[in-house]
Image (cartoon, rainbow, N blue to C red):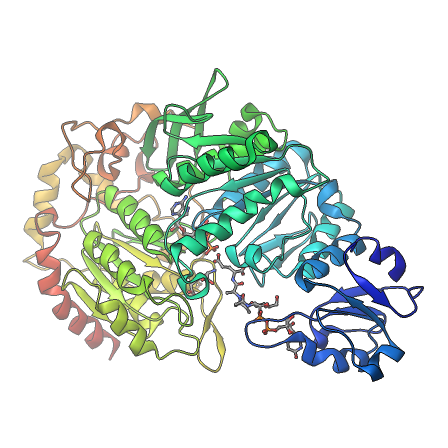
Length: 623
Ligand SMILES: CC(=O)N[C@H]1[C@@H](OP(=O)(O)OP(=O)(O)OC[C@H]2O[C@@H](n3ccc(=O)[nH]c3=O)[C@H](O)[C@@H]2O)O[C@H](CO)[C@@H](O)[C@@H]1O[C@H](C)C(=O)N[C@@H](C)C(=O)N[C@H](CCC(=O)O)C(=O)O
Ligand SMILES: Nc1ncnc2c1ncn2[C@@H]1O[C@H](COP(=O)(O)OP(=O)(O)OP(=O)(O)O)[C@@H](O)[C@H]1O
Ligand SMILES: N[C@H](CCC[C@H](N)C(=O)O)C(=O)O
């Protein structure tokens, strides 16, 4: 594209120099300039792109886009495009050079504090079932319809984003599910993206280091929705909002007041007036079932995910897909086969009755949801391993500690990605928020995971939170390979097989007495076929639980009934899910997964007292 044509996309810019040159690409990073590219100077947090203009020119930049005027020397030699907002200019140029790809795709953006990645994975899955090819763009991966590559950002810089969208169009994708981070909105990385729909999942504390206050953070999220009517490529975009969320309800109200009919608002949640309304949630061992009502029709939705928060993610995906033109019936059908989202409530395996999950919870709200969901499975003890990232929101550290310690029976506080911060200092800030003494700081994450798995006994769940799918750990001077899932598999594999001592035997008997009919199943764990059981030296591989939905989940009620209290003391009535009951009548006999083992009578105090001893044991074994 020649510069003159490019300039027509920037109506407010002023240009000088020969505009007949061809622009071969665009970047805001002088280090990436290649001959013929346009260099856009951006004022950043750390640095100012205007400082690198000379360097960009030396590398062959064909034109400079800047917020400043050129000096006398430079203006003679180059094409200079003056813009009041180079971030918007970057996005606009990148979109034009990529052929305005978002206008050719059904583009659905997902924002919110938690649930973006999960929702986009579900949405892309639904899109693919309907359209064969669809793109995905977010924290974990970028899928251009042909190839998946590791993501660098949740929402990348505009030049990268637009070329990824361009590749999707080129590869025949009909739509894209993309995450929209608050950084992406604030830094105008999405400025030239034309959205068919924007989803708001929820809003809670995070990123205060960057946004300063919750009010400012919310305004940034709202700006995404407020920008929808300004787009010229898409007719009446849809704002899909979780109206059960306090801030979601606020957004519905404010958008309605400020934009009237210019934005079509669709709500989802459990509230009576939601457009996509969920009722009759049944949490089961292998997933969740619920009823969805939309426009006078009811659907039975089954997904292989656990946790009430995933019901919201599922609803968001169905409503987002509907906004992109996919019938809810088709979305519901696709969701029964939804893929595991890497590192999101990912079941690693079970050994010796100890079950391990890895999850990406790194905000207080996420950690609370995940801990409560696992606690609702009815383990003997919930052991949570977590830390907090360095160079990120410090305020959330004690808050994460408070929720984790309130719900878990034992916490092992460890390092997340310390980055430039002192890991011990981060741990101290976490410790300050602990509500119980049942915790141990173990700065080395590998050691913390292994310790958790080793001290856990039959019937316990170990949650490893914070890093989910991440394959590395960011330390002060280096980024080292680190995968929670891999370490956890190894820890499970290495976990010694318990020899029952005299003291433990009565416990087994007490379990047998509890439900003699099932006592044989106690030894046959659902995942005993997992390679982690193998003793032939092979590395254990995670095996996904078999497909959900093949048996009638409704057959497995809570046989004990009664007014059961959830882990936080609240009564969730019929919606409480009980791991112990859920699978009792499993029709496939030996394949049951069961957390019942161990000593139910001593789920909290008992463990606290024995932790040190168990740790000593572990240490001795290691020696
Ligand atoms: C705080 C933040 O978001 N920073 C992002 C921002 O950097 P910045 O504004 O500080 O840029 P800078 O380093 O000051 O440089 C200014 C300009 O000079 C240019 N430059 C710089 C050096 C040089 O030699 N030559 C040169 O041209 C830079 O390319 C840039 O255009 O712009 C850069 C280019 O797009 C981003 O890579 C960088 O992301 C950093 C690495 C980052 O960690 N960001 C995280 C916090 C982030 O964005 N996270 C969200 C997810 C959050 C969530 O979970 O919801 C995300 O979307 O990924
Ligand atoms: N709808 C939800 N509400 C609250 N917590 C959630 C929700 N969905 C997922 N979570 C929790 O948040 C964690 C992160 O989920 P997910 O990656 O889907 O969110 P995200 O918004 O993409 O986060 P990030 O942008 O930081 O990667 C999950 O591992 C889970 O613990
Ligand atoms: N997108 C999030 C990821 C946090 C993940 C956690 N492991 C950490 O490093 O803090 C952020 O940049 O805040």
